[in-house]
Length: 155
Image (cartoon, rainbow, N blue to C red; front, top):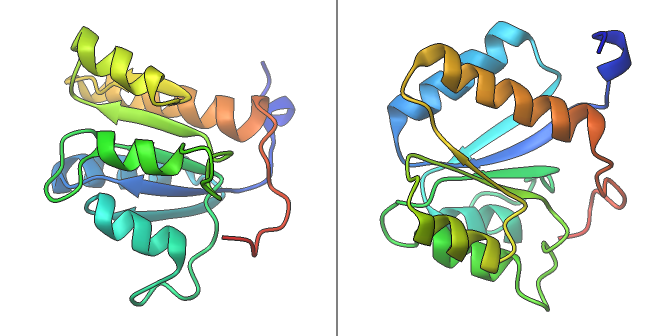
């Protein structure tokens, strides 16, 4: 598919990741690709909820179009956060959540989908494969999928 055909509005992505090395790789990918949009990083589920609720210094935080979520983090891990985000009464349940983690365990995959993750992607160890996975995620959610981008000021 031609690049022009994949043109899309900028994505606002919330990256919930505690590993600085993985964050650096993700930021490098977005910089190298000159992707339009914003990447906001928080280190765990507790801070992610503060971001989503616009609390504790996040008063101007945008509503993300997409959440990239690691599973294994301190304090509140990705499994717990996913349950909060996708709860029936959650104001964020329409935001796609991509579990992007080092785990390939069948139990983690099943639990993530049971908690309504939109996708589960295992982080590759190889740099090119890691970047390739990010490219496919961005291409799909940035250009192929239709996202709920209405009412950007809602919670």
